[in-house]
Image (tube, rainbow, N blue to C red; front, side, top):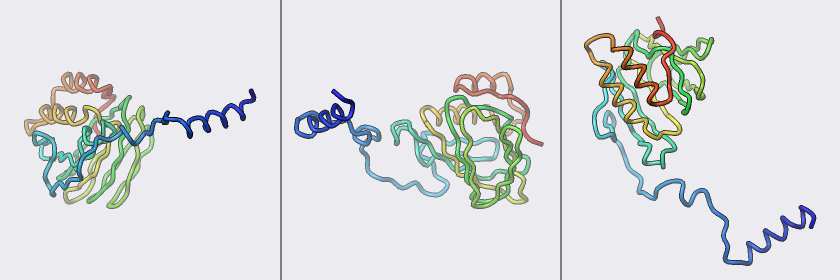
Length: 187
């Protein structure tokens, strides 16, 4: 049977039988009602703060069948930013809601201001630094989102007001989530 005839026959058989084709949307997202999250509130079970920077999760990974997690990072202060790092299993999206940020992606330096956004695919070396005069705010999306909230909560426990975190513990945490620290924060 020619390929074309085979495909036409198969489609016709499926259309007239009780066999149904799987539909991605049927099982991809848990059936839930919509919800509202107030400003400065988080849906995660505990408050996460990096030094003086709150991380407020607005959409948890289990809301989207581990597809996506979204948070808002407020009170980013001048000089604030992560070390040079890489994620091997997830992508990140950043949107500047307030302030001025410098991002480094591989060897490129990009300036982001209010309204600008940036997609960082997995396996891209990156870091950022807040460069504004007043506190800055980021909207951040991570996909897939499985386990991301715990990753950030665990990191928050290492990033306190006490100063520089134990980098051995930080590197171990990053590796637990298929990520690596590759260098210092931006200056």
